[in-house]
Image (cartoon, rainbow over all chains, first blue to last red; front, side, top):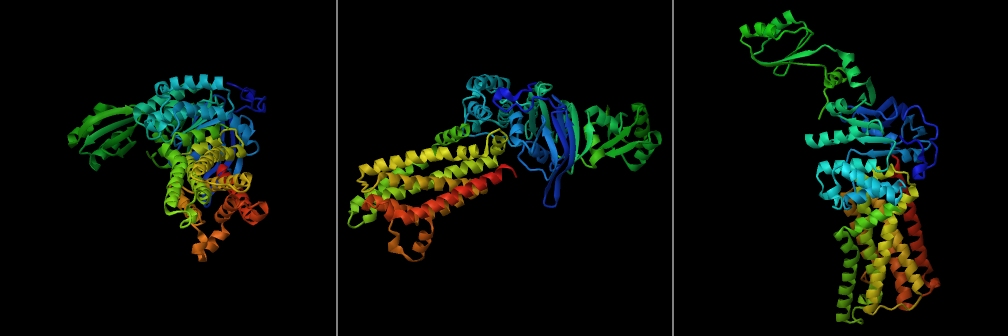
Amino acid sequence: MRTDLGEQGAPNRAAKKPSNAIEVRGLTRVFGELRAVDGIDLSIKHGELFSLLGPNGAGKTTTIKMLCCLLRPTSGTAEIMGHEIQADPLAVKHVIAISPQETALADHLNAWDNLSLMAGLHGMDKATIRRTSEELLEMMGLADRSKEQVRKFSGGMKRRLSIAMALVSKPQVLFLDEPTLGLDPQSRSAIWDYIAKLKGETTILHTTHYLEEADALADRIGVIDHGQVVALGTSAELKASISDVPVTVVEAKGLNDEAVAALVEIYPNVKVIDGGVEIEGEDVSLYAIEDCLRPMGVVIDSTFKRHVTLDDVFLELTGKQLRE
Amino acid sequence: MELAKRNFKEVLRDPVSLSIAIVLPVALLVILAGVGSGIGADNAPYLTATILTPGVALFGFVMLMFSAAMILSRDRETSLLSRLLTTPIRPSDFVAGYSLPFLGIAAIQAIALFVIGGFLGLEIQGSIGLVVFVMFLMSILYIGLGMILGSLLTVKQVSGGYTVILMLTIFGGAWFDLRDIGGAFLSVAKALPFLHALDASRGVMADGANLNVIATDLYWVIGYTVVTVFLAVMAFRRRMVE
């Protein structure tokens, strides 16, 4: 990781490396009656990939906009690589880059010009711009389309270019706001691969409302709801905070109250779900379930075991499921 | 200057914007002057190259105002502006980045019109410097208006704002004699800078008027330009950190 800003002609104000890359204290933003972000505290380590997970309107983008100096906090402070966002926004802007939720490209320019624009605004010299752009276009699989106007690109290509535009200035801190929003599974997994490659090198604050994305990528996850961080930890810690007991899912037809009551007599933690039941417990026997339900006319379609997911965590913490 | 370069490229690569900006005003000048010469200068004194060229130049500036407003408004809507605002460049560089390319194109446009006008019989009796000065101020004023529209309006609304400014420019006497119409039209036009800019440049070109003669008109133009630039910078800065 680079600690000297001098390379890009920026003032060398970060000579003393701060203990955390991002330090947020009581960050709040109020819009009229709405407390969009409500006293958030966060410490994100150097090289960490931190996911802010929450439903639409939870305050994720507002938080990122404040950290990128695009939105003034109502109260609270935040430091990026030791630079306070309100006191020294220019120094903050030297070390950050963002890939916004919208792809945010210059449509009439080609991919190469889009990258050059961003690198140029960061004061990089021509030779470095050329080398870095070539590397990024190659890495993002856009090298053969680099001279085409980007408005002709597919959604997935635009996303990849958007991330490349954030990487071209070699930021120390990278903000990725919903980087895979609206993409097909194949493009999403390709972008996950690119993001995973950056881990450890660049500090990344990533927002998503895809649980599996946070689960797959993040070193730590902050669950955010109504502008507040309601849980913080690694994926495993968050899951363990609820329960580490496995869940047996039984999908069946003809399940009635009587059949469920019979099951509860054997296993006390039975939850009725759409099209079946979930049974929480260590030693749940599939044979015992079948012996209990079959005589009552229930047809079992399938049974499988699963461990606690982030979805369960989210449901437990916020009382709702994440919306797509 | 990266931003200025990009905006310049964006206009050049958008054939519609470019043809609107350069080809349309030139074609308009040629057509109107052609009609004028068919009717004869005595019957249509307003359709001579000398009188038409400054009016058509303002029409061209309105087109550029539209392009400037559209680029800025679109950049806001696509969040490209947000992305650009997270780079370490100063507010003044942003304002320059969104205005200088259009001032450059305005200069090319005005030169093209005055050169073509020359072939069509345009004369400048007084100081060329004064005409250039008035045109320069007006190009700044229109680009400033573009910055205001682009900062405040959505892409769809920009067309509405453009239509208003276009109408005000035409009814400032771009290619007819407003004094023949008089009344409320004239009163409104006198309170706006467009008629004053046209009167000043036409006075210098057709009658050889000097600075003293056009001073009042010039004050109107300078006043409006200064206020517009101030408001444009304010509107833009409001968008920088919300």
